[in-house]
Length: 425
Image 1 (cartoon, rainbow, N blue to C red):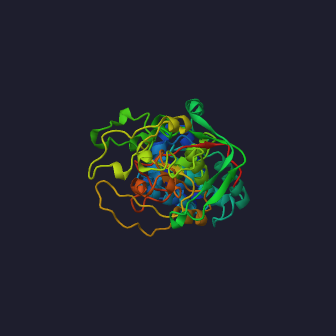
Image 2 (image 1 turned 90 degrees about the vertical axis):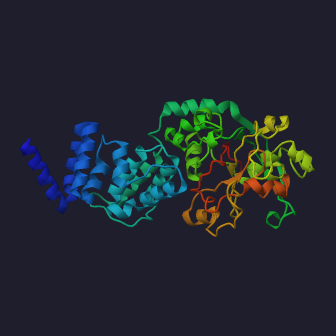
Image 3 (image 1 turned 90 degrees about the horizontal axis):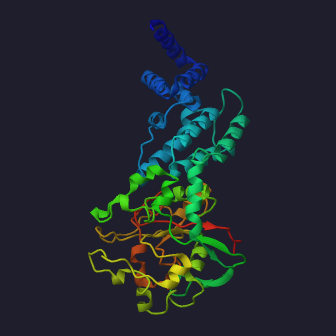
């Protein structure tokens, strides 16, 4: 016993000078010790304060728990925007932290295996892609940079492979009856009523596509990320978390919704696709008619909401809307491309000016991301299709400043999925 402790002390001492030499030995030891023993050894290395050795061991070791990986990298759990962005920052800084691309790839793989959070998985893959493309500076002590790039590509391609295949099959079966066929066709997008909707232009879809008839629900999303159940609200005791399985999932960032969609072989709708599907062939001011009364029959707007009082009854439903895209749900949608910042008047906050942070589209241009989602309620069309609903219908589509970024989460924000991407108009 004393001999083993002395040998371990010698390894730690020599590991300070040559961490790359002893990291492999300690990583193999973790694999032989099993889950509990591996975690204990990592904790012992942590106590030594040798960060370089610790990170290399965690990158290569097998049998360490998800909690140990998160604790080593100080990845705080949580779904709020600040917590998501804090974890994102840690993930992006991993290559600079370890100063070895091969070790960075190993650490990123461990992070991916330790989580089901779509937001974190998105950023693990993004950093791996950067390494693959040669956008991350750094060398490799054992092997070559090209080897690290190939390893990064393989890890990025398989970032979702640790998720339960059985749950994915269950989710696909759950989604199957909700897909709605949207036929090929054309429509006039935009209006002359508002400056940012001009000009009216013709959009043509040469092939049809399928859109999910309902927003993604908690029951669906749990099969992808069971840990997200912690983000449920009880809405002041009016809707217990355990009664929300058929409620649209909320507090999901755009990055997480992208990964969920990819896991089931779908994607988020673009703005023209959402407006085309929502309009459903109509040419009236609102898709339900031309008057405010027509709007009131199918949706809840600020004009119908008593001041300083939440509505006590759900909005009325219309058979045509349910036939086209399913029953309306009380959540906004993530679809299309964001062209300007939005703001939202909270029930408990005064109306305020939008902040001047970069828009989600600006983030896309800088980070080479996919099209960023737009926000609207399912019984509304996405802006700039405001003529479908009218000026007074816009109040609840406004967002809290700072939450119009792809990392933002909101309990009023949901999303749908689309299959069979059409040709670009």
